[in-house]
Image 1 (cartoon, rainbow over the protein chains, first blue to last red):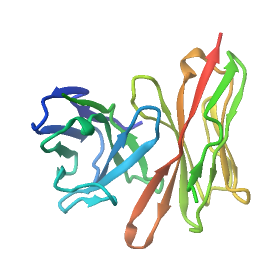
Image 2: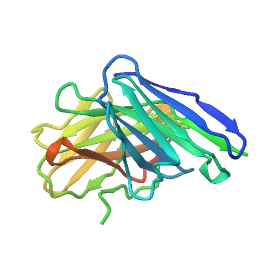
Image 3: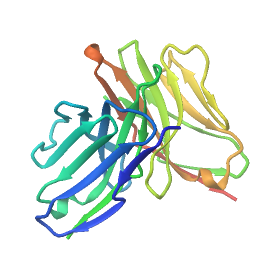
Image 4: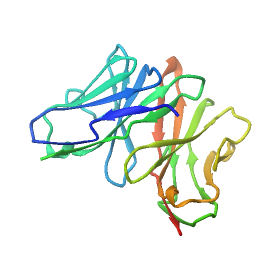
Length: 117
Length: 117
């Protein structure tokens, strides 16, 4: 299957700082990437859809000024958690959609565990 | 109404036995896709199998098969010859295709599978 790289895998930061998470599709081009948040023992919650060369589409209730998304190339999307607070601590996971064929399978990165002190 | 329903929070299976993980979905769109992902304790989401709404035959990928019953709106995952490494959370997901090329993927709440030696 296709490979999606997500970095960093773990980050601890102080309250008030910003954290950037990168998501790269390594062996395919992805015009669309997705950012999810997952709380312990829960399902994935879609935060936003990242579109190459245009603004991201945020789900209801997700603060776009808090979670900045940039999809500058066909293989890279970044999520920046600005002025992070302890309630932002969570597991963030990205996916990239492989549009080869009709399946449009989303391949996921390994996720980033964010802990805000 | 829930788009994707997984009614089994947890399942146990004996090693080398087969196990079925249930998934029902709800959509009025004729074009959609169904996916199963595996999430081990490490957190990564691993794509397992895909079934398109227009596919006539049930999808199979190695030890994984998808029992697609369109009229019942069910897409159960069957794992044959379970292995200890199959112990993980399993998520069913549905991709809906909307006009203008917009797609959205919704995940179920997951089933935790534990394989017993």
